[in-house]
Length: 206
Image (cartoon, rainbow, N blue to C red; front, side, top):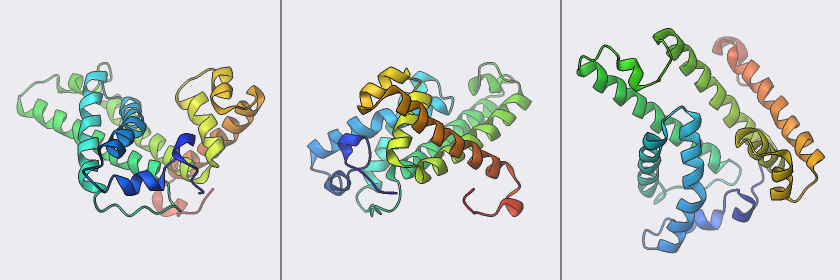
């Protein structure tokens, strides 16, 4: 996947290089401004409550301070995909700590700490579906053309109106539907692949 510059909401190799320097406060502020909202949004997509999502986001950013010192940027891969995986792991760790704390306290309603309304069976099913959804999204993001992904992100993931998405990208409204539609089909193909048992699907692009 070819990366465009940061102004296009993609990864800037220059910025990733600059944040290796812990004293470059300007670079770190820019990094937080660009990627902080993305991490927060992913936390919310993972079902983390707003107040807790802020905490998880802070934890991710703190981890990145250590990670970025030695991070080797590979322009052939998606940094956003990597960041999403770090966020996914942080959300999983958060849920695990909540479950363990609730069970240790002897609270029979521990599930309510994780999901407000789901039953235990629903929670397990939703968790599996959620992991499948995010894995399919990550693979789709890595495969899709950056501009197609941007349209899909604005229109579908962020829920913006087609006209607002078109204005943000400087394209026609009809183009937003076409571009987002391509990515949606790609996502559906990946989801079908990932729904198959691992020993049957292989790791071939759909």
